Image (cartoon, rainbow, N blue to C red; front, side, top):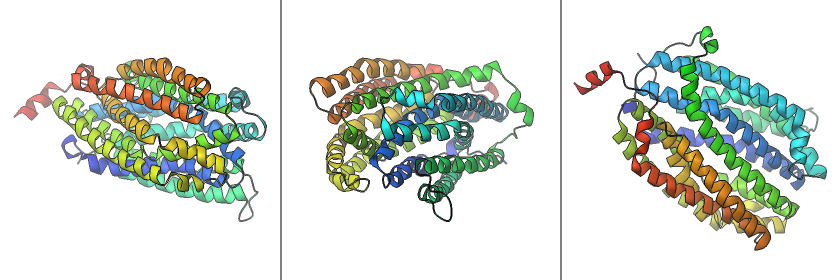
Amino acid sequence: MKKTKQTGDLNLFHLTWPIFLEVFLFMLMGIVDTFMLSSLSDDAVSGVGAANQYIHIAILLLEVVAAGASIVVAQYLGSKLFKEASKVAALSITLNLVIGIILSIVYLIFAKSMMVAMNLQGDVLDYAVSYLSIVGGAIFLQAIINSLSAVIRVHGWTKQTMYVSLGMNIIHVIGNYVLIFGKFGFPELGVEGAAISSIGSRFLAMLVFFWLFYKVMDVRVMWRDYFQWSKDYIGKILRIGLPAAFEQILYQAAQIVFLFYITYLGAESLAARQYAHNISMFTYLFAIAIGMGTAIIVGRFVGAGRSEEAYSQLWKSVQYAMTFTIVAVSIVVIFRESIVGIFTDNPEVIRLAAQVLVLGLALETGRTLNIVIINSLRAAGDARFPVIMGAISMIGISLPLGYFFVFTLEWGLVGVWAAIAIDEWTRGLIMLFRWKSKAWKRYALVKVPEKQKEAESL
């Protein structure tokens, strides 16, 4: 009896709510660090926030393999080619581990140079270097987690990955409390304590993910599968993974440039940006979850040769995601000052953060459109188009506009948010027309076996 849920059994709601909680818990790790470190100083928060920009880039690099493999596995599952799915899954773990080890070495050696390049100084620089050296030095753990969780998820086991994330966050919170503040006889480590807690919880999560991985596979992965390098499989993984990761790296690189702009606005603007960014993440959380759940379904439908069902599913998902996002942003806008006040009592920081959160209705609806449609385009195999449009829009529109708004019009932090909102809506509308054109139908990675077509037509 197969453990994997068949394509017809997949339901968007059943897939999405565990993904929602899993992504929420993943985001919560960063929020917990911010909240607990805010009791030390705004400088500690700013330093960790700046360091996390590089951590996010590393995670996106690791998504080259994880995202690519998940789509290839999903299409193989849709075609009921379970042996091929297992081989791709094993290969993705090895590839990501190699990339993770290389990134860990880079962060250990160049942490200070990276943070100095962001124009950080004084205590903010010290905090950032300390955090990046520890968390970045162990980023290979996240490499393995990314591959394992992606494969487990596309098999329909989204609840299980959510439970692991829950356990990881509980351990992380306890570790933060003990190591940041020096409880139960442990030393008071501050920022270093938050970093150590983060990698400790990831290590334990990795062990559990490996156990789940061997339970979920329809064809058991053998030891030799981790070292059998197939050009065909690697080519399919990279065909999706490279463009997907490059698009995200472009986005994060643009955010780093915006962060560089903000450093010239002062420490209060830098802290306000970090608080507003963390709060905003929760407003597009629904879109991320729905986008990931939709990608699983679309990938399975495309692999099974059922492209019209994939086409229809996207429109339903966009409607659901936009509804959730609008409700979430509206709540944040209404209570914005009180929410920011949870993190800081600095009135100027509260004013600045609350000011940009009002623009969330414009920014997050555009971001939602992008998240859901781009995930589905990748799941169908059409990964190059989003990255080409992303490069044109982010580099050609958002960065120049941001500079103009911040330094020429002197809009400050509001100028950054306005530039990003314009970029999101530009790309979102382009992606919408791309899906409607159905050009993605010709990019399927896996062909349905003739025998299966004949059997399903009877």
